[in-house]
Amino acid sequence: MWQDTARTILKTLEITLGAEQEHIFFDDVRVKVVAGGEGSGKSFLGALYGLCRSFHDFVVHGPDLYWIVGADFEDARVEFGLGGGEYLLAWAEKLGIADRSFSSFTKDDNCVLGTQ
Image (cartoon, rainbow, N blue to C red; front, side, top):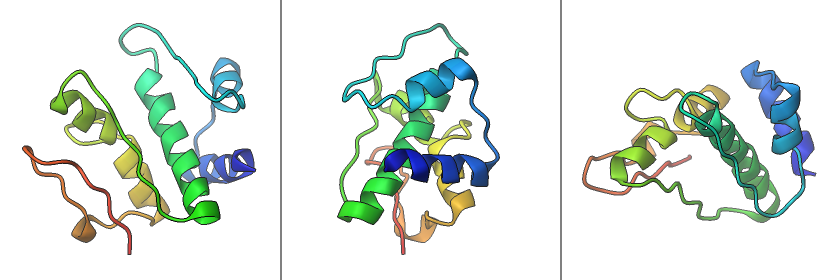
């Protein structure tokens, strides 16, 4: 169950979700729409959810492709954890599942997160 993987990742990263965040995060619905103002935690929760689901899916099903989408390329880069955000990329590195030497983060190219 992906929720068990997520709880292990949250514990490893020393992240505690609030009650409202947990309700959204652990819900089994297929599509989630999260809205809120600037600084409300949408990026944080989305990146964390993406990390946990993709890690679980990789272990269970093997490699797959995931998309991070923004209004423009720079928005997507920030969500990925480049340009100041301490989200997906930083967490993956902390978990030891990301390897920058197999990754590409050029300004005019796709961001690719590689693993060994």
